[in-house]
Image (cartoon, rainbow over all chains, first blue to last red; front, side, top):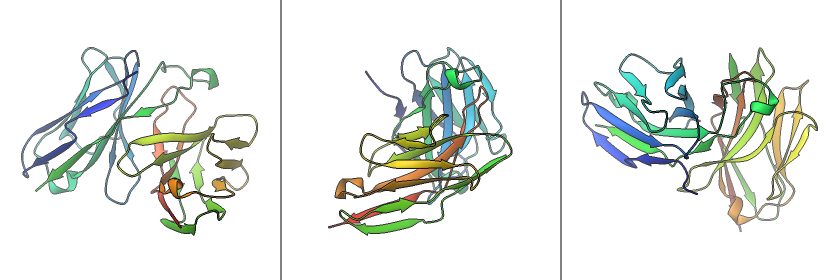
Length: 120
Length: 114
């Protein structure tokens, strides 16, 4: 079946502009994660959705970053007043189930190819 | 809070040589442990994971990793590498609660030369 898809694959914008990054998870996956990977670094957690709600947004760096998942499927990461330091690859991952703890509830995260954001 | 340290940013080896990629973690709670691989121009893929049970876990392509709780390590090994193993390898941990968000190391670039 289809994997996680992200659009656009590349986005170049100017400092101060607004951008939206889209993630289409695997059908039926209720958990969705956003990560950011800066050059030379590992991915860093941004936000976790369980269904439609943001269960953990502790990784969002500041209030310029916002994400939604209104119908519990597609998610959009929104960045206002972009800065050069926002340049990175933004990764989305989805997994089935979740929302409960314990070994039996663990599910693998499947990653999309990422969106490379460049802020000039 | 959790953190992951990958001690080597780059590891060059010759084909058919053994390799070890080192990973140490720090956490105030017990964690699950993972190795992810990113081949050139591809997305992140799960290579192997430790959730519970035997501390030695294996992947389908010959990699293995051993969880050492006393040393808080999860080193990745392969006895004989191939050119096709050239990739970036990331060690990661997650908590055992309902939120399985991953904390990654900075990655190790494994380059296998002929």
